[in-house]
Image 1 (cartoon, rainbow, N blue to C red):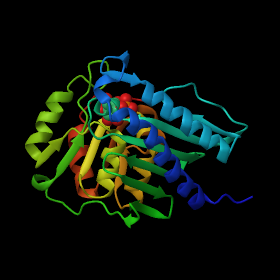
Image 2 (cartoon, rainbow, N blue to C red):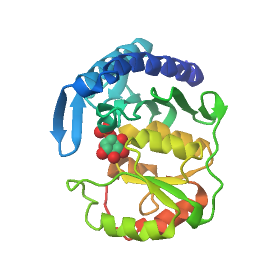
Image 3 (tube, rainbow, N blue to C red):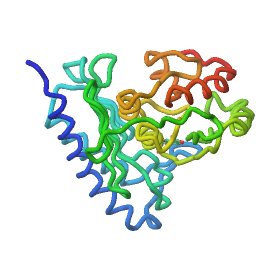
Length: 269
Ligand code: LIP
């Protein structure tokens, strides 16, 4: 039986919008949301759990026998181990809890490849989509990575590493050296949105040590939009999906970032 991934992508857009109705109801009163602490700088709220619960229900209605990895509840191992959903019900939870832009991201993996995915910014009502071999779109308009090739004009996205992260040692010295080489550095707070912004050319590149559940859909969009994706040492998906040390960028910016990041102590899968 052939699976119509383009039709599934349309369903993922609807599910992300439905989950956004739940998260936006909480967002409207973000000052009063009860905050749970998962670790240093790592928070959770009733909105994260409510969003993931709804998304899981809708995804299992599409394919009850596929596997799923989320952020807030235990993974589900389906009878069809070939297909796996990756779900982050609120990416950029700290942003969300402080009234700033956040995203909802869902990706579908088939074996070792991402076949389709969405990143939805409910605050801006921006739906970013990607389909393997089918392109990347923002609210239906095709996306292309930035054409900037002069480092002095490049705008880089990143996340400031918290002490718990393994690549924290030397991170600020690397960032300082990079800051001197590029036009500007931005810390937006949602890995999924950062990847989507690289795909549509708002950022020339992005790097961070972050989770693959957050970035899988955005990574597909960057590749479909003409960008390059590796880990900090130039290795491919089979590695960064496990190490989380990610670079997504246009070709010129990728070379620039790699030059700075490959000096980091190598992190093996
Ligand atoms: C967030 C990432 C972000 C990173 C934050 C956090 P969460 O994910 O999207 O890039 O800087 O520390 O990991 O926890 O909001 O899903």
